[in-house]
Image (cartoon, rainbow, N blue to C red; front, side):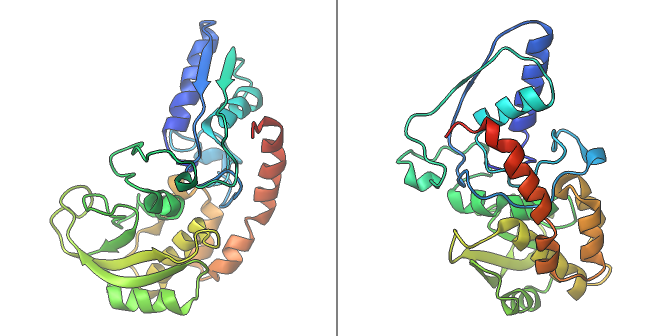
Length: 268
């Protein structure tokens, strides 16, 4: 789904490592990145935060590559040495969102039900390891956030006042049937995408985290986000009250380095 912490990416890397050690060929049948292959966004992964939800340090949250391209990059940059063949797609364009491919949406996991969820996933899931529901256990996972300790009206007013490009917020109340806060009433915000080409979902996640930290002191366990968000320095800046737009601007250098690194592995 175009996110650094989506674990199928790491599973693919582990397959390549094991296959290399046993001299078994690896074939990756490439598929579209549903949120396109152009936009790159987010903090690069801290070296010491590498894990199953972050295989490659220096990768931004939204790497802007297909799985086949990422396989090529991992194989070379991590020196895996797999006998790798990537079977490229026919007709895919980097600028294409999934609904422009003519293909039928097939959820890559039970909670990834549509393109709206995929578009917001890189931002909302960056903070789902905290005491915040990202909608698992509801009909619209990754389209809204909430918790029993949130005042949805206050949060939506604060976020809309920020005039964040490409999105609007309205207050909601929901009760997850499973996962975090199962059977507890949560308040929060539903996120409406008004311009998907303008929205920067990782920044949206930071805006929400910043607002929660500011509006509800002592309630939001933001430190729990380190592995998924990937940048301890970024979390510190949120806790210090830095402007989210300034925090996002600080990602520019890492995003530019990634754009150069990935260039030689692109297939489309």
